Amino acid sequence: MRHVPHPVVVVTTLDCPAIYQDDQSGRLTTRIPEHWADTEVPSTISRTNNMGSMDIIRPLPRAITASSFTSLTLVPAPTILFNVSLPSRSYSAISTSGIFNVHILSADEDGAKVADLFARGYSGLAKDSIGGLRDAGLGMLSGLADHGIKIVGQEQWKDSWAALTRSKSASPTNPSVDAFPAPLLRGPGILHVLKCKLVDLHMTGSIEARHFALVAGQVTDVVSGNLPRDGADSQRMALSYVDGAYRGPSPEIMKHTTTSSSR
Image (tube, rainbow, N blue to C red; front, top):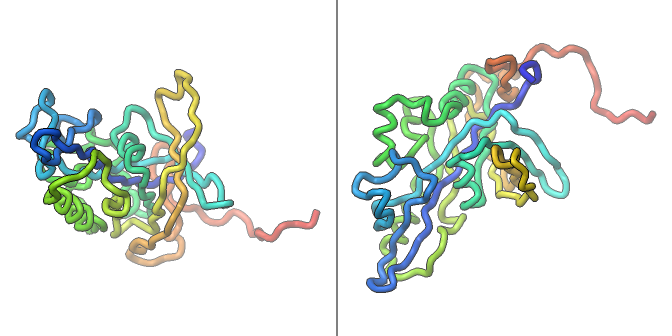
């Protein structure tokens, strides 16, 4: 499989804690999700007392690099597919929110840099960066501005969470999808973004299935990202991974037509 090119994409989603209402005080509180890392837990809250106010426990963005991306079908609705190794915080967040964004990367150095940012998860972060995740509020997306990448939707989910925080009452619920969009990245190395909603797939209970999850998403919208800096047609191809390295497109091998043959 090292010799088979695999499309490389970055998938983002928003990890929103569930909201609860205290029976006695009526105040809204949130609970730290079990899959959150210790570095993501606010310093004022311990694991033994995992309930906290909404202004302390807030939505946290997730991002992963996937090299198993493929088109599942175009009819009756465009649907894509990729797999995630378990356990995965991003998969837990996708399962809860039901929405995610798939970023198609350019086959150049910019695209490779974006892919590499999220390819190794927390193991790829410096120790000082990990410590900063606790209160940064951007999780794995911290520091993207240094790479010229803008996070679209950040202000919307912050304002929506603040509005819920000011609310006096609410029934136990998960935040609505419309109010809390998945992070959308725009900048060098990102060609297009596929906005997706989760499609329920029937999974078996085999031992193998416990080590990975198949994620299918129906594409609801396509948003253009920034084109490569030189705008060359060859670099508008999508990034791939083969033989242990990120690769771009090779020259066309032979001329052909996409018109169906009558034979």
